[in-house]
Length: 257
Ligand code: OAD
Image 1 (tube, rainbow, N blue to C red):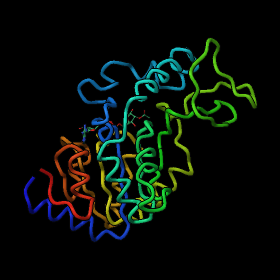
Image 2 (tube, helix red, strand yellow; image 1 turned 90 degrees about the vertical axis):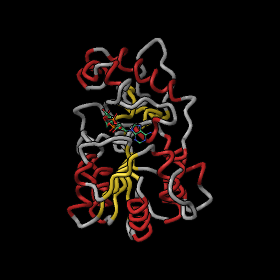
Image 3 (tube, rainbow, N blue to C red; image 1 turned 45 degrees about the vertical axis):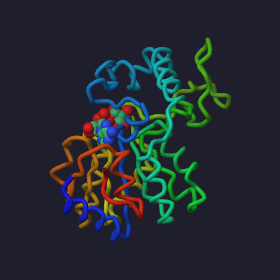
Image 4 (cartoon, helix red, strand yellow; image 1 turned 135 degrees about the horizontal axis):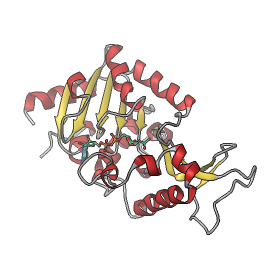
């Protein structure tokens, strides 16, 4: 990465009064979590229409619940990487929430709790726009619980008898309106939006950086390749999140190796 671009990126971070970050599956790739649209990504091996839509859940709940149970078990050995940790330290240090993620892997939350002590832990807890695969919710009454292993019979809500399903947004489902309102408010007030590890093709999440730009703020993209958002970015930093973010965000570090 050329030095002028790097200096400009560090200055934008240093001077930002209200910074936010939007992350996607790419920030968890170095933790061993598969992305969706890269070679080897989940949507290259599985059809979302069969596994990640309300219609699929209604048609064949056991297959859908088993797929999410498999995704959950595949996460058991994954740990936050240096990209997650650098973002957690950054927001802890600023004492203000600004982390918005599309990921359901819970790794930002774990990084925030592991890095806490350097600031109010809630400052680094993410807004999980697409939910969290480590939680279940009731399909009928929206009660929520920590996810449990799938048994022989379909899990039922203890309060209303509805189907217990992963607390994640399926394709075609509405996002949590309060979460989305909060994320939009943060994006409109931000003067810097870091966009990390997302192909920026799924809305409404992908509209958030554009809201920052429309309000006069800058977009700085961190990705290993071009995306749908690269054109709109003030700077596009090419490289892995686990390498770029610590160098970009930690106060004392220089440019990446
Ligand atoms: P994608 O798989 O669409 O995109 C992953 C992005 O991460 C790509 O742009 C990669 O180039 C980039 N990437 C991969 N490894 C990286 C690394 N080490 N460092 C930096 N960037 C890296 O995943 P998302 O954009 O997150 O939604 O997908 C958005 C949504 O589509 C997901 O939340 C999910 C999916 O369907 C739902 O399930 C509702």
